[in-house]
Image 1 (cartoon, rainbow over the protein chains, first blue to last red):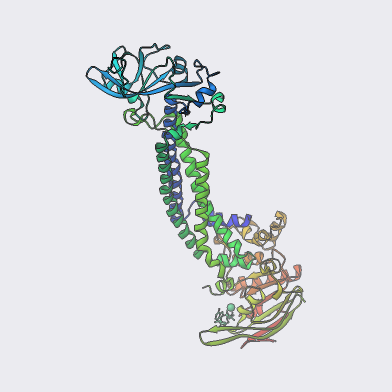
Image 2 (image 1 turned 30 degrees about the vertical axis):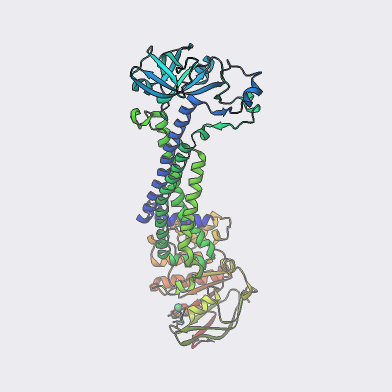
Length: 378
Length: 219
Ligand SMILES: Nc1ncnc2c1ncn2[C@@H]1O[C@H](COP(=O)(O)OP(=O)(O)OP(=O)(O)O)[C@@H](O)[C@H]1O
Ligand SMILES: [Mg+2]
């Protein structure tokens, strides 16, 4: 093995100088760029996915139970504590907001004060610790669309027009107590927070991050943030796969290059190979030399490409080198995050590819006859 | 007997013609013997040496090297590595490796421990002690051929097979190689089989053969 390694190394870098052939250089660059490009693009997609998750959880928690059959409420009401801030019990209603002459359909999430300020993370415009009965908190997009500021009055009407005893729809007058900002899914355009007085058994929801009491007491389906954004989540997952696949083509082309590089070197070194065989190297030994040769290029290029990309990711996360305009991108700096699993898949996949393409040109070794080569030389 | 050859035959098909290169060749070589073979160009000297060196197969016949019948050996590479040293007309050194590395190839194939002291002594014996770290291209033709001889004998083989070892050298270097072979033969008890056109080297044979029309005849 030591001999094979030595010969492969010297064939690659003749006479200890870095004067390898241009074909080798091109395959190195190709594999380097391919690996770096995959890691960087996947890390950006991961980064946006992370932001999607963290922003979504701020308004919705990690998990949700829709208590359609009231089973959860019935079974847990003995010890459910509405003042507990580790979960949120709330009603959700569709309502119409009317402000001056503009109106908009919204979703009203009625929650307790404890949940509002401790469970959710609203990024409020003004500091606040208490919401009263006739107050609501609206999102910043809705505020600017309806031209509303903190302290303005609006009227809310039930969308399905619950009529009161007098035959007119219930209209409530409320005050905009605060404005929240959230960067995803136009949440701050449609979501409105209000106070929960008495939970109505209809439209009851539980949102929580990690609440043992709820998980152990329900047979209802628990929806994670992924389940609740399935289409978006799957879209980004598919995007990641397509990116991975498309950029793998760079690695594939670079492997072709490696293939021709090996053809070139083997035909140039045919006599040396025959001599090695006359000295006792067997045919698999000859193959191993060139497999080592291509892995010196291939693994070197792929690992340094990954290292380069991880370095960029580290620098970006520490110093925010690449800035974004938050008006268009939700974030002010390019988010990047890479997982060990992605890197592992990349390393294994590309090294298998390199292996296959270095074996293809080595088929000639099978019927190589050293004495023919040695006796026929000029 | 270190080598015993019985009824060796080899044919080549050249288009429709059948070339009987070797017909019923038999001979024995004792340990420590120098055997020289001459014959016209194309008579089959290289073919015979390739077969003896297990680089080529005979059509029929038996070869016993060091009491092993090579027709039955599975791992010929190993046998070649340990029992046979080759010197060719051209030095055939690997130009990317230093002289020391070139010489050590047979030992590395065999994964042997390398004794640096012995290697230095060997280079001194060949008068190349200052060139161990040089590359083949920095050497003269004669020096390169001496390194090739070193590589052939490093594993202390049963037989050194030399095919026109001086075919590419000037007079002075031919003499040096002849002296070297004799010295190695006497000091190390090495056995040589040499094919040559050169009369001077032909004369060092304890047994001399002429190969003509497929027959090997002792002179
Ligand atoms: N693979 C082959 N196919 C067909 N003919 C071959 C093959 N190898 C050798 N020959 C023929 O066999 C004959 C013997 O060749 P060989 O090389 O052994 O001769 P030689 O005695 O070494 O000659 P020289 O002194 O010129 O080196 C030649 O006629 C050659 O053309
Ligand atoms: Mg010949």
